Image (cartoon, rainbow, N blue to C red; front, side, top):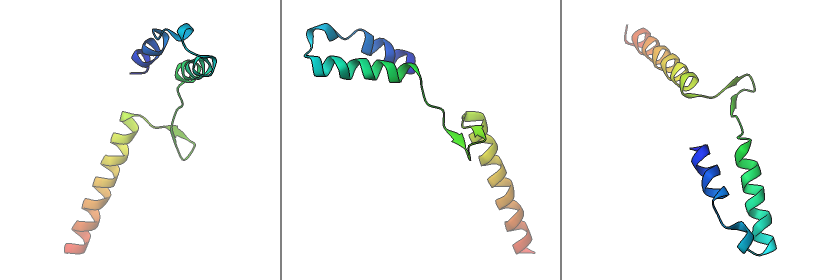
Length: 71
């Protein structure tokens, strides 16, 4: 999870690293503390619930099309 990743980065002995790697670790820690959200068409955030809704909708539509074409 993101919390474990942050903790792992924080626990690195960054002060023993060269300056370039210290800056890299700092950047990784900063970026991991502000996770990016993926949105669907810029409207709704993608989550397990929205992915499930989309999957159910696609399945329902597919079954409807298959039913109509078999008649």
